[in-house]
Every structure is written in structure tokens, then in C-alpha cells.
Image 1 (cartoon, rainbow, N blue to C red):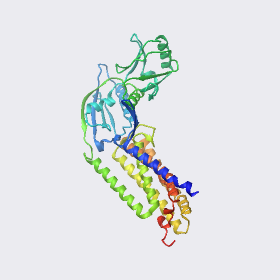
Image 2 (image 1 turned 30 degrees about the vertical axis):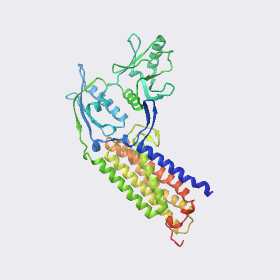
Image 3 (image 1 turned 90 degrees about the vertical axis):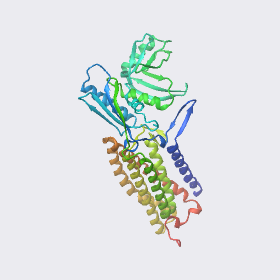
Image 4 (image 1 turned 135 degrees about the vertical axis):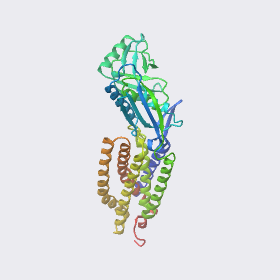
Length: 432
């Protein structure tokens, strides 16, 4: 029985090391000159307070009268686009007296030139989608789309945007494709031709797709987000723009990351000195928690894409630190309970089982109440508060996965090795 349990430690350790590597360095697949995959820590989008950003004032590019309702509609769509990209550290403000919209948002993760004009294009395009028949007649537009989804067509080795049409759009598209079999239906985005597929047969299932010269998944994801957010009620042009300096200064991020690394190192040394084998397992589980938090910030649950990447602000970093602190606390509680059981005379196996069982209620109570608060902050909050709620909530959930489940499996496994079956390594006396 002991022999069967030994590999568990190495299996869990290997999984955590793999997640850690992916979290920090990413994991990419290449299709010719195209690539997709999981973004690493270098792709995190930092908040304005840490890395700075852009402050832009937009004005309607139209000769028609602009109403307050038009401004409200544009604000809603711009905010939706920012939310779809996980840009929580942003502001969209309407100046109704001057018919202006002020937008503040952080730089993209991979921004190197810090060019405000390029950054503004990320949110300021009108994204009006139009399908036209060979005679140039409009047969479909963005209002006929229920949902746009980014994907990859493995058969043709290209990225695509799949469109799920509403009932009216399905009827229009079925009629247009039945009349133009063997001909092209052109797809335009903001009056720019992006695709001209040939109609092979009438399409009556209410589904269509957009293909083109998309280089990677991020391009089709950005297009899908714009289509889902809808078209702006009018074109926008930039009146003024400026860069925003980081609130904490240019070197603040490097200092914070160095401080975090030193703190984690000191915690690791303390856990090893104080708790020996349970301390070693605790260190590994905490590393796994940090790695999975980074993956979650980039939009992944472990390595599965689940939601939009989040902006990491200073309060967001505080959420990570607080969650790691709770993870350390959970491991300390468990290690102390195991130590008590060993001192009381239990075998190592019995002490491990009893220790986790007795620590469970304390860990559960503290983490559940914290998660409820974090969830409310994320749902009800905005900007930096939302970032704090996200990282804290994710970290608390990972406490259960890493600090309870994974650490328990690792400790059970490593304790089966003869070299680790000494009570002194679990808090017992030398003469026990």
C-alpha cells in the first residue's frame, strides 16, 4: 500500500511545476507564421497606478445632432469593450455640455513604444459589420448577430470568427446565400473589406463565419469582442490625448516584485525551519497557488481559457498578497495540528489524517467568509476595487485546491518514503 502512495507526491509536484512554468513563461503553438497559446506573466496588463496609461478625449465625427442619449450609448459600448478585454482599471466619462467622451485606461501588456494613438485604436473603432452581395447591396449587418465567437478552423488552418445570427438575420442570410450560390458575399468592417467567401450552398442554419488574414487568436478575439459590444452610434475622432504617468513611479513595479520574491523566500525558510516536511509541502503548494493566480489573471483556470484577462492594479497585488497570506495560514494551522498529534503519540500516517481533519473547519470558515466579501467586491465594484476582489477571490479558491487538497496528497505521498518517516520531521521529540 505504501509503495502505491509514493508516486502521488511526484505527480502533484510535476503538475505544480508545469503550471508554474506555463504561468511565468507561457505555452504557445505555431501554425506556420501564426501562433496561439497560453500567455505568461509577461503578458499581464498592469494598471495605471503601476505602469501608467492613456488619457483620451473623443468627439463625435458627424454633422448630425448629437443627443445625450447618443453620448450615453457610446459610453456604454466603450465601457463594454473595456470590460470584455478585462480592463478593470479604466474610466469612461461623458461631458454632455461639450459632446465629448473622456477615456482613461492602462497600456497593453506588450506595449513597448507607448504610442497613445495606437493604444486608442484598441477601443475607438466603430466596428460596423456589413455583409454585401455581388451587386453591393447590404444583406446583413452587426445588428443581425446574436453572438460572435473567436475560434480556429483546423481544416483550413486559419483563425475565424463564428457568427450566431438571430432569427431575422438567419432569414436574411438564407435568402442572400440561396440567390448567390457560386458567387461571393463580401464582409466589411468599418467599410474595409476583410473577407470575400464564395457561397457553395444556401446557408439556412443561422450560422456564418469570418475568415481573413488574422495572425493569431488575439486578433479574432478582439474582432469578436467588438461585434458583441455593438457599433458606436457615430464615428469618434480623437480631440486630444496624453500619457498618464504611473502613480507610484516608473520603478515601482520592479521594487514590488523584488519585495514579493524576498518575502516569499523568507516565508519558505521559516516554514522549512519550523515545520520540516509539512513546511516543504506548504512551500510547494504556495508556489502552485501563485502560479495559478497568474494564469487566472491572464484568463485561464489552470490552463483552460475561461474568461477575459484581467488588469492587475496595486489593490489587485494586495489581493494576491492577502490570499497568499491566507494560504500560509492554512498550511500553518494544518502543520501545527499534525505536530500536536505526533506529540500525542499518533503514528505519522494517523497524525497527518487527524491534522488535516481538525484543521479543516478553521480553514473553511476563514476562507468562505473572505470569498463572499471578495465576490461582492468583484460583482459590485469597479476599477481597482474589482481587481482586488478578483485576485483575492481566486486566491481563496486556490487555497482549497493547493493548500488543502494538493498539499494533503503530497504529504501523504512523501511520508511513505523511509527517509521521511521520522517523527522529528513532523514536530515530534527525538526520543519518540
